[in-house]
Image (cartoon, rainbow, N blue to C red):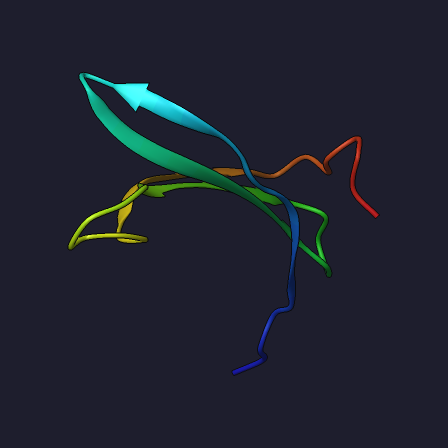
Length: 65
């Protein structure tokens, strides 16, 4: 299996507040395909950095490398 390399494009710039809960957003870019992954995680507490949701995009990111 080939390992893919992801570059972090955006992280920790702001908090997402959803229903009173704080989350962080990280945007990754797949270095081979240019596709992006949006990853929202718990901001703080016992579950810090646990994923809340993830979304994928197949188009290359306009601000990526």
